[in-house]
Image (tube, rainbow, N blue to C red; front, side, top):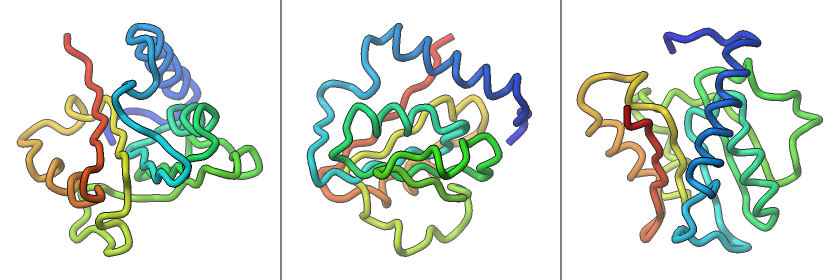
Length: 143
């Protein structure tokens, strides 16, 4: 991860989150169904703001957030009951077997600009984590 993980970096991530949500008018695309048994992953969670907001908006869903470092995530006593955070390097081969076909929805934001090159290996990993019929909710800047 080429960017810092300090207070300014955390503030930047929170601002990016606000810009996306306010600009789009939604946290998760309205066509993506979330129900009582939904299992959602937030990959490259950063500060965890997206996962925490999603968990608050959908308390019936289970949200698992991951990043290569949890340095910017709030302390565990601040986590809602329906959220967990874990260290995961999405580029590490192989993916843990426990993550295969695990999620109904997989969320990822601001990733292509940080990982230049062919995105197909990443896409294959992400799709392997989805249950059949699952949704990949990927948001990127279009600058």
